[in-house]
Length: 115
Image (cartoon, rainbow, N blue to C red; front, side, top):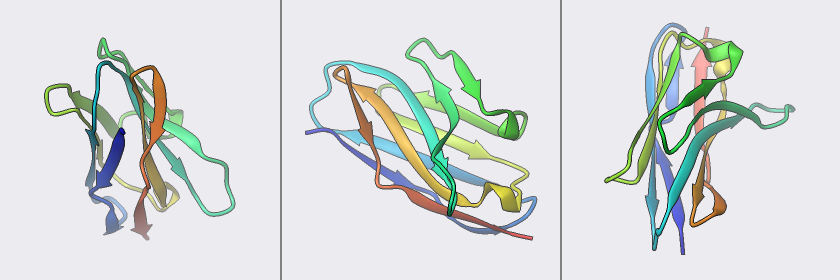
C-alpha cells in the first residue's frame, strides 16, 4: 500500500519561508509526476506546482518566482520551497503523487501566513 506523509507546515509571518516535504512509502514499481496542491477555506483545491518524472516543472501563476518544487527519486520524496510567503498562501497543502499508475494524496499540512 502506498502512503504519502507530508511535513514542514506551520505558522510564519509574511515574507518568511517554509519548506514542505512529502515522503512516499510502500511498494513502488514506478514513480511518475509529483505535485503540490492547496486548499484555502471556502475555496477549491488548486494546483500549486508539479514536477514530472523528467523534471519538467510547472507552477501556478500566483507562486511563480517564489516557490520551487523539487524531487529526490532515490528517497521517493518531493519538496516545495516556499519563499516570500504571503497571507494569501494560507491553506492546507496536499502532496499528490502518481505511483504505480495510480494517484495518491497525502493527508495535508497546514500553512498559515500572518500579515
